[in-house]
Image (tube, rainbow, N blue to C red):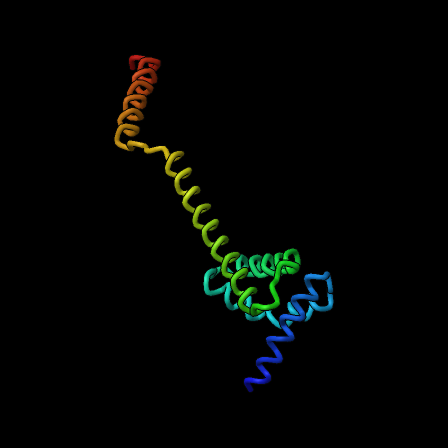
Amino acid sequence: MHADLSVTRSEERALMVAVGRGDRAAFTRIHTRFRPLVHRWVRQYLADAGLAEEVVQDVFLELWMIADRFDPSHSAIAWIRTITQRRAIDRLRKSRADRDRDLRIGARDLELVDHASVERAESVLDRVELGRALRTLPPR
């Protein structure tokens, strides 16, 4: 089993190097091999399935874009996990910041209405209107 794992890790490193050279077939193999794992890692940070899927796509886009920076003396899986964690944490922070901003804006725009004052004002206006209406009636 350990020998199989060693071959697999060696193959993953070779695939990442090939992706760094622009090999689309190697990228497809990396994507097929790691997508379920990347998805599982992302879901540890993000409960929203839609956001998680976006992050998974972002991870693989980033892998394609920066694969030439991969150091084959290191583990491909560790490198992919680092990228995944960074992307997931960034999205989590952005989601929290967006929510906090929305709450701040909502609190700023919230109009506090004193309903008792509004009812008193309406009551005064109703009485004024009633007085006008009564004055238009004939004395009888």
